[in-house]
Length: 165
Image 1 (spheres, one colour):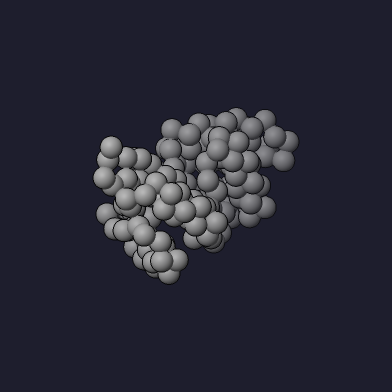
Image 2 (cartoon, rainbow, N blue to C red):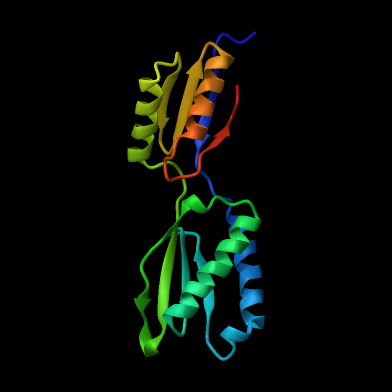
């Protein structure tokens, strides 16, 4: 029997599901009446974790985001990890908007989560390991209490539990 149990707290978005959601959203946009004659597109740059929405005006950019949001949620992707930026005007009267995809837990959120766990005085040790958190305890019940605490808290990012030992 193991003397200590642990799990990792992560915040991940599956890029394959994002690509799939964008492809299906583009198919819907091509066939929609309100997008006829406009050059609307959705581009995903995996290197910068950014989705770019381009269309002929602001209304269509907002509609693009609504379509994308429904396709992302149908695939079970956490919408909390998609931060919407403001709409910018592009060349030729077009409008563009970027959506940042949050991968990993930022340092400030990680510190906030560690503080919340320590305030509850649970018998669990939490360590920040890059963009993940490792929670270690001698009791599985304490780990379950930590998990329920994190599920109940609002940290403005979606948290998943991974690597149970």
